[in-house]
Image (cartoon, rainbow, N blue to C red; front, top):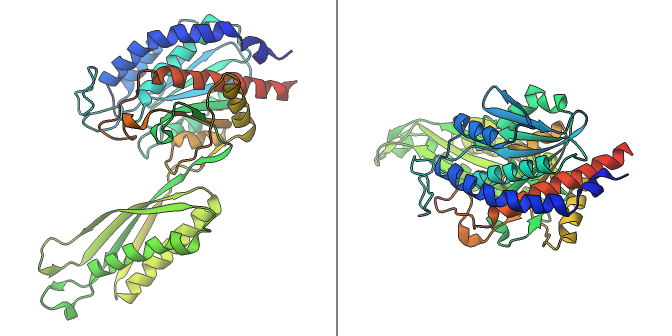
Length: 393
């Protein structure tokens, strides 16, 4: 018997609609009281208090929350991120934050949607598969909360077989969904290049080895890596974000520093760009009689949706009349770390572009956003239960 199919009936969806209405007030509360990465303790306590007593609840070091419903055995998990950004809000919303932080990436919506789904499942059990909730800190910083969850071993302890994420995505500019199989978010690495030369007075450039000139040449040259080394049928992004050098208009500085980001959708491409970046940095420094130090810091890995899960979720959403489209982003998400421990799928949830871009001080989801994200999460749980159920049959 397909327990997931039997469970995926009207009652759970009716119950979700009821819980979404309640969760919309929770969304406004979470939005008004954001906590930045590493300071999510109050937010975690709020979420745990919102869940019924039927849930087993566990708190791990670093503001990680793990909740479970439905007994022992292989489980399906849903991730909800808790951290906000250090951005001064300029939305003008009645529930706008006033503490110098802001949920400018939709995490407040994700959390409220998660609570709605958890309550709906608790009200319509028995479940086809146990449900696990991962209340995750520090998605917005390099000290990744997802990485810490994986390293803790809790996913294995909870026997998580599939893990679902959902994220608002204004770049889709629609009210539909995307759960494209394969790579959907890029690996995100950062680099720092420090070039050291011989300083001099600006009136005597022939006495210098100009680090700033070398850094300028590096900025131009590294842009050619993507243009001339990446297959044009594929893509990658290399962006220089900062240049720091000098302190006087009439002096040639001794040192210049350049930082930037590398975004790639395949591991061979990622390694190739790292290699070429080192070659360009060394070559430019040599040509300008300077020395160079290059550091590349690996960040989030490529996020690859499990193909079977993605197809099943798309089928479920389409069958219920929702628009399902293909979408990939060169943004990154530490949700990708979970793929080392379970089958994963990220569902992008569209919203009107007029609500503002992610990480903008004007980012303001529409009133139906909580409901759409909750639908994505519940659909992800039900579809994953069907996929895992086939493997057990």
